[in-house]
Amino acid sequence: MAMTIHGATPKLLKNLRHLVRPLNSAPPSIAAVVSPLNIVEKTHPNATGPPPAAAAADTSVLDFDDVKGLFGPVSTAKLISSSVILHMAAMGPVVDMGTWVMNSRVMETPVLREAVLGVVKSTIYEHFCAGSDTEEAGQTVRRLWDVGLRAMLDYGLEHANDNVSCDRNSEEFIRTVESTQSLPPSSVSFVVAKVTAICPIDLLRRVSDLLRWEYKEHSFHLPWKLDTLPIFSDSSPFYHTPNKPDPLTPQEERDLELAHQRLVKISEKCLEHNVLLVIDAEDTSLQPAIDYFTYSAAIMFNKYEHPIVFGTIQLYLKDAKERLLLAKRAADKLGLPMGFKLVRGAYIRSERQVAASLGVESPVHDSIQQTHACYNECASFMLEEVSSGRGSVVLATHNIESGKLAAAKARDLGIRKETQKLQFAQLYGMSEALSFGLKNAGFEVSKYLPFGPVEQIIPYLLRRAEENKGLLSASSFDRQLMRKELKRRLKATII
Image 1 (cartoon, helix red, strand yellow):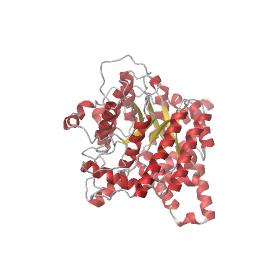
Image 2 (image 1 turned 90 degrees about the vertical axis):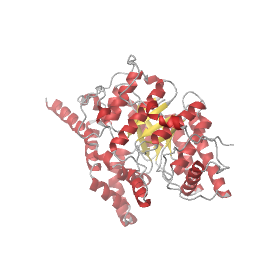
Image 3 (image 1 turned 135 degrees about the vertical axis):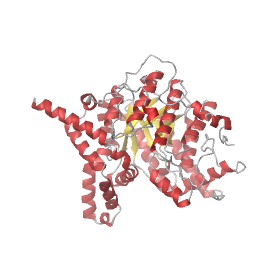
Image 4 (image 1 turned 30 degrees about the vertical axis):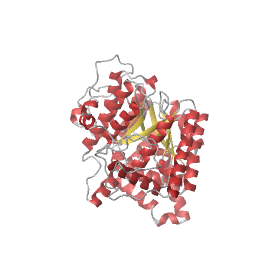
């Protein structure tokens, strides 16, 4: 019999704002045990940030003027190439052209395909990807480890449509976990898995529909359902499922069980090799099934003080804060250690387009300021959970202000690096100043490393680039600091 936890009491939801303190608040001062981040109070004009009220906090702990300290471990050649590639990636027409070429008939001509892939491999692929296989990715992990950064290994697999593909993808995830044993201890913080790669995509949509209908109609019975944590709140989007869905067929139930067993095997391998597993998020049409898989695996494997299986919450969604609180509180009641990766989200365009086409309210926050506020409030909540020993969190952000606020909050709460329950993360090739600034301050920082054959990874990268144009354009902050460091080095060489 599956455990059913449909949601919180109205009182709990009503008091949500009292349970989640903003990042610019903290309990009585605790002696700082993490060296302060040298962040200046002034917000850089090219860096997006939270609403003015949040930015007004005392977070003057990270000095971006110390470019030598930020980029000391980075070679001059790497600084030059990074600055050029980030400049190209920040240009909307370049991203649009790249997307068009990769999806055009040009790629059907062998000679042209080879030429295009060669150019892409020597530029954006080498900058944003860790390599073509576990061996090359391992070399990247070692380079990061040498400069004090950790790695989140993400074998770049996308949607699968059949069990043969799912089995093959599952084996790739397992090989990724096994590859960590040849790397320096603790150099890999997480292995990343995508449920869309180990369960047929159409089945995930079916499961998501059935889970939504069960939430709306409590008498609706799902005989295949495993124990899980709350997946929805009352404010979650349900427009993807306007009508009662048909039950899963016997074949679909068998396929669902196969998918579950694949995730179990991956989780078992992570437990065996002492590597944490984080499940990536998807768009709202699929996310209920993703959360179902994630939480059922967490209930099975998060048996000790440190969780093995982490979920991902996309905080540009209006219901994200409530869902986080509901899942965390339910986990606490079960005595279940639960970890979350907090991100802003990567499907803003498609989410808004789908909602608009259906004539319904978008599930995404109406403004970037609301998204910033939601991220910062949830980060604050999870940092307090970490401080009290009841939670683990990965704060995945490229936002300078969110990094400042979270670092200051962690410092004030006395969260020690050795607790290993707080991790900051940024994409490989992005936000180097923030990554090194946090690392220099004594925080654990990971870089998110996609890897795999170039033909497999490029569509993955282009999809991310299309959805994250704003993020890439905001890289001007990093580029400015890189140029400043290059000028400093040139001046030092001449003198």
